[in-house]
Length: 181
Ligand SMILES: [Zn+2]
Ligand SMILES: [Zn+2]
Image 1 (cartoon, rainbow, N blue to C red):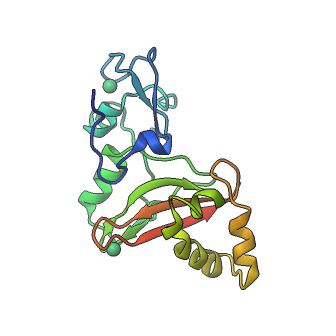
Image 2 (tube, rainbow, N blue to C red):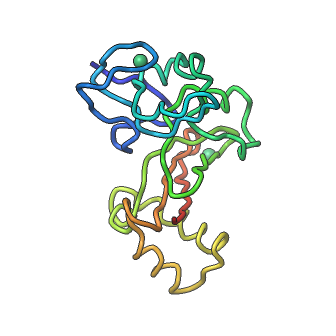
């Protein structure tokens, strides 16, 4: 069974926002699909959605419609069209960060979220994102010189500080930011 395609979050199994689960029925379609969405779900009325929805009901918008849910807070994004915000909030799996997550944008569009990274990932599969992290640490944290490298060396995929890696769907530039608890 192929998971649904979501262009702004192309591999939610790899990022941990979708997990295999043979027992959990989806609260939206009432079926046991074998996979559950484990990222954030924001809804005024329903506070128990995370871990209880299948990725298909997230991707086709039915969970957003049924529960008034959004999976990403797009309130801070203002340089992208409303249709993109809608797709991101209502039809794209979100991701969990230490702080309120933020989706990065490039070329007037939301970028694709690729996953969490620590030092190992930033010297491995996400090495191309390292310049973006360095820029973030200089600009947002005011770090300079060797402090930048030391901070990256302390980063962990599952322990703070953590970097979140994105790639532009148009110019293919890697984008990144980091946060800590
Ligand atoms: Zn479902
Ligand atoms: Zn771009």
